[in-house]
Image (cartoon, rainbow, N blue to C red):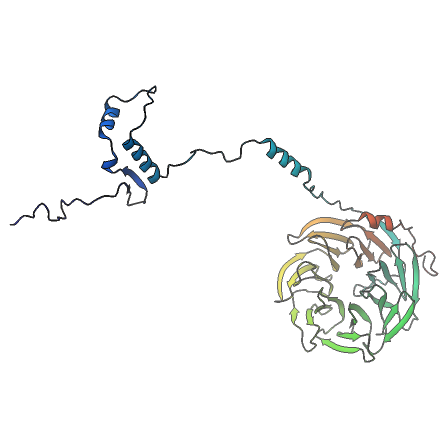
Length: 442
C-alpha cells in the first residue's frame, strides 16, 4: 500500500493551524474551560525559570516583550482589562450627596394622616311631618348649598351656608303630600313631585312657579332626576318620562320596562345613561337617545330597588341596594350587565352615596349609616344615629358632608367624608329647631 508523502494532507495526523489564541469551550454548557495561547508568544526560558527557581517579592525586574504580549492576549480574551474587579452596591459616602438627600427630605410632602370619622352627627335638626314611606325621595342637596326637605304637604328650604330655614311652599290636600324632590344642576330650579301625579318646577331665587307638568303620571311621582334641561320622572304607574322643560309638549321620551312603581332614578355622570329601580325588583339601564328598549335589565334583587349610585371614578360601575326582603348591595358592570359583587347588609338599603375623593361607599341600612371601603367592602365605620329606619340621604356639593332623614322626624348632618375648614367656618352651628320661625313646624 502506498503511503502518503509528508507533504500530503492527512485526516489522522494533519496539523490544523490555530489562531493566535483561543479558548477551549465545554460542549455541555458552553462555558470556557481553559486558555491555550499561541506558542510564538511564549517565553519558555522564563517559564522554566519561574517554575524551577521563581522570583521573590522583592524582585521588580521589567517583564520581557513576550511576557507582556502573553498577558495582553490573556486579558483581551478573558475580558480582564478592567480597572477594578470588586465594587460596592451603594455609592461611597459623599458630603455633597448627603446634603442633597437631606434637602430633598425636607421638601418631601408629608404622608396623609388617617381621616377621623366621627361616630356621632355634627348637627341634629327637627323635621316634623315626615312621611314615613320607603319608596319616596323627599330630600335633596343642591349645588347652591340649599337643602330641600319635604314635610307632608310642604317643601322647606334650609340654606346651609347661613343656617336660615324657610317654609317655601304648602300644597293643598288634593295635591299633596310631596312625594319627591330634585334640584337642577344650576341649584336654582327645584322639581317637586306630587301625590296627584303632577310635577312642579320652581325658581327658588325668585320664588316663582315656572311651570306645572300635567298628565305625566296617573298616580304619585316618587322619583325625579334632572339631566340638563331634561327632567325625568318616575311614577307609581311604572312609567318613566323624559320631560324637556323648554318646550310646550314636554314629554320627549317614554321608557317602559317596570311593571310596578319606579322608586329610584339616577343619570350617569356623562348624562347618556339612566338607571332606574322599581318595586318589581328590577334595575334597568336606558340610553338617552333611545326609548324603544332598555340597554340592560339587571336581575338579582329580591325586593324593591330604590338606592342607585353611579361610581364617579369608574363610569360603567353601578351600585344598587334592595329593600327589606333583599337587604343587599350589588355592584354591576352596566356595559355588560354582569353582577360583580354582592354584600349582605342585614337590613333594607334606602340610599347609597359614593365619595368624590376616596374609593368609599356610604349606605343607609336600617337605622344606621355604614361606610365601606371599595372594592374590598371592609367596614370603615358604622354610624348608629337614628331610632327608626332611614328614608333618604343627600350629599353636599363639595362631597364631604352627608345629611340623613328618618322616620324618627330627625334630620342629621354627618361629616363622614371629611369636613373642610372653610365649610366649618361658613356653616354656623344650628339650633335643635331650625324651622322654629316657620309657622306650623315646631
